[in-house]
Image 1 (tube, rainbow, N blue to C red):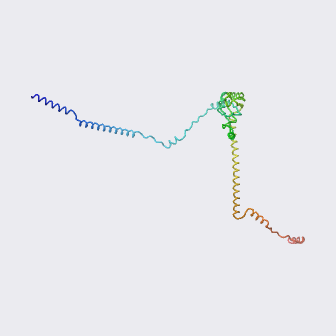
Image 2: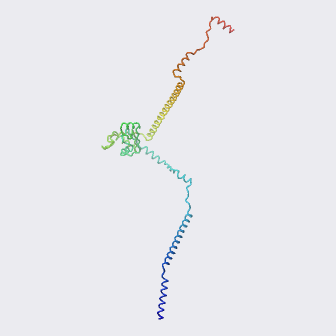
Image 3: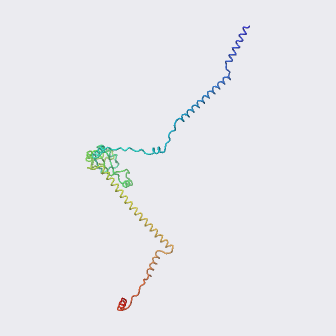
Amino acid sequence: MPKRRDLSSDESSSCESASNDIPSDHEDDADVDSHQSSSDDSDDEKQDERRSAAADKSSSEPDPPRPTPSDDRRTDEPKKKKIRKLKLDATQDFNQKLQRRGIVYLSRIPPRMGPSKIKSLLGEFGAVTRVYLAEEDKTVRKKRRKAGGSGFKRYTEGWVEFENKKTAKSVGETLNMTRVTNHKRSVHYDDLWNIKYLKGFKWSHLTEKVAYERRVREQKLRVEMMEVRRENASYIAQVEAGKKLDYIEERRKRKGLGVGANDEDDGDKSKKRKIRQKKPFEGDGSATKSAILGSLV
């Protein structure tokens, strides 16, 4: 019997220890809440640390430089281009190249043909450096449009510069009075070249000619403008004089006197006018002579 009591006491002690080791539901909830609160506190602390670190970085970094008005002026001002100085050898070589060039004159430019077309056609025979075409007068173009013609820009004459005189001379001799192209479907199939080589003619002569013609045109235009202004001034003066005469007539009409009546009055006054004259002296001539001599003595 005592042995049984010992076993029971041992079992009860073991049950109590087991019951003490097993946690209850309330205790589990309390532990979870405490864990969550500790994790939240740690997150808040981390965020505070990050904010303080960012603030320290911003305070440690220097402020960006503000643009001054002088900097704005520098940015607004255009950059100066570098002037390249030409060497004497280069200028001499260029002048020699200009002396080697030759110019061809075109007395007629076919319609629908411009500088690029001429350069491409004549470029097959040699290197073309410059092309100049004289445009037709604007009034001629307007008249052609009114008559129902084409409104394309046309040219009256032209000059073409080749890089070599020999090529220019050969082009002027071979292409004169020949067809522009041999393609039958081309617009310029029936057109002929009218070319002549200009011996001793330079491009500077052409520029001088163009400048002279421009000055003459400007002088003519200036003279025409002066004549128009003079005519306009005379017309305005005549209009003002006519207004004055109209005003005078209106005043006379208001007073009741017409133009004809005033003229008649002026005529009557001129007729009634009298000139006072002394009567001629009547007597013998001897008496007058004696009287005159006596007065002298």
